[in-house]
Image (cartoon, rainbow, N blue to C red; front, top):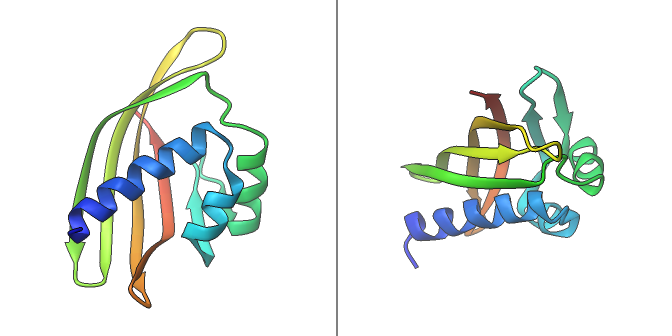
Length: 117
């Protein structure tokens, strides 16, 4: 599998883990020093991110509309865009950038940033 295909697949798994509150997936695929910058500007470390994940996605659905992978040797940026539906039926859009690093031959997420569009 090419790096491009592997990262595209990881991106899909990341979104699926979000929607399924799959803490174990994140525990395995995030580095210990992972940082997430939320759309409200708050910063979560890995432990806080896992706790938030366990509480559930807070949305009814999320449809990934576009994702672009950019490779820089052992670092990759994944830029995504999607539409979410809240439990009250209202919708919104978000953009995100996830940063991956190849560590010991395995791609792992080191950072994420989410922006409501």
